[in-house]
Image (cartoon, rainbow, N blue to C red):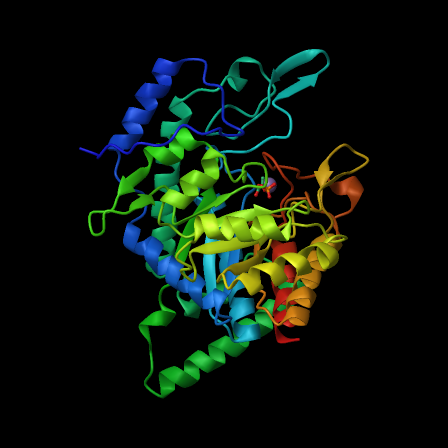
Length: 441
Ligand code: PEP
Ligand code: MN
């Protein structure tokens, strides 16, 4: 029996309009009886890791799809994404000699906010795609009707995804002695892959040396890996919120880390209220319209006790804006004494439409926003705590640029995202090398 939790009735932006309220009730009742996907203690461990990043003792790497889909929750897809994040983490850990806190945009990223509620093409109108957790991607009227059973399917897909992630990260696949193997099918022939091989070679030598000295620490065999997603559809998140038997506190057990998006961060809205009530580590996306006063108010609301690691501010300003927009926010939050983790999302402020009509981002803009983020924090004496990126383990052609040089006319070759354009594997690895260089600068 799951305890009943009551929630205040507040305005909630970006919620699906479920056509059948009884069907929603059934789905929510099902979700409430299902076991937690993560444990409260794991969420607390992540808060502790994020506290290290708040203090400048660790760097956070968040990455994964813009929108996970049910069909792509396959072993290959999950492994490829995980491998990409692990390779990036190796580059960062080795390059900057800092522990890397790894959080996948995984096992819950099934819900998408949209700037337009309705989409129309050739005179046909239908509800926009709100993520696989709500409706179906193909441009067909029926499939676009929000279906609450998709919330239950989200749970089961998240469960299968997390199970595999746990197996990979705890069962030997993520053993440091596999650093070469992660690269095998990949990029030895690309500059980033080549650079990675050299790092892997150095790590191998260090491991052999340590083994020869008789050291074979347990830490090298497993990887701590956390799951995070945007807490958008509150029917799902609330149904997955439980009372922790140890403390009586609420935890959203659908993921370790949840964040509030740029479109749902209203101070008097249901999302901020939800995030304030749960004890998970939480994040908030901050776009270029954010005022310093708003950021401080958010800190007061979401972290009144000033627990380090509890709150991550994920700025997504755009490459051309970050150097002006970020400093006053960082200054005011720092002056308020609130401990936050500063994370840079260099994707969402840099989206544009290519001549072909594809939504794209340029690698140069992405890298430049991260560079700007580091510059600002260096100037202000604060710590650039991490990055939050949309990526995939496949060789897709969704973002242009990088040394592999996906060009605009190649965008149609492998454009597979269900929502925003993701960095492919080579571009992701390149970004990790760039970031490691910025961290050392
Ligand atoms: C996202 O992370 O996919 C997203 C929608 O971001 P934002 O809320 O920053 O626009
Ligand atoms: Mn996105």
